[in-house]
Image (spheres, helix red, strand yellow):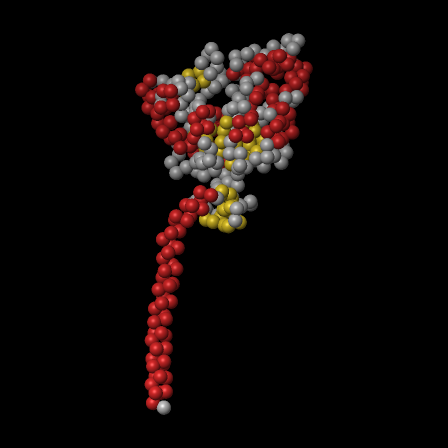
Length: 357
């Protein structure tokens, strides 16, 4: 009997000891489970970011600063994650088909001066501020505006000296060589402007959706602006009006109907003149810069003398030229798109002005 009693006492004391230790063990496990993820989370996040594309959920805002959520899509499923400092990335990248004489230089320059991740032939966001400082310093030193319009061939160059211009005299950080653009890449761009052949778009981020904005001016006004740029006088008495048109066209290869067959490109249109509605529209989608600058205006056309353009006094010629223009892919697309659901400014109030450039 004595032996049995001692055994029971031993077991009882052992159980009590375990009960006293158990809370300490549980507490230690809780601490470890809390500390280890907190310590290694940044590394795991970096690795995840390297293999995951971030896209905003459809229906959420694009350019506000009030926060939001994005959708991380990987091969293993979809998760919702926090946005970059409250900024909600747009659901797609925006492209700007810079068709000649559609205010593209002004649009590109203005957006680069005021918004992040703008990447274009006429300026990138990351160096727009310093470009403006060099312009002010060099123009002050030379005692006059240093924008040069070459009378012989109408090639405009804002003659600001920098590391690019030393290697390529007709270029600088306000007029970026296409080879430099390709070398930099477009992975960190929200808005891309290109002044090259239409098939260039197939090479730009082919695995990511691009909403390509095509500027559409009034066809006749646009043609006359191109004539002015090339220092050509349109001859209303010519027996070959198509030839007169062809003499004025500037790099018409920047647009082609086959862009509509590119799966990663969706075409939209907008009226580029005046430019303010489009700038306001993109302002709702792009992230504003912390430190902004003013756009350096640059002229690429002389002022037009509208009274000297014969086409405005020849209704018959105006109609014939309009018909010929709308046979071209570009003007035909614009005719179909403007005012449709694909017109990005359809809901914006736009004023009408008579262009002087």
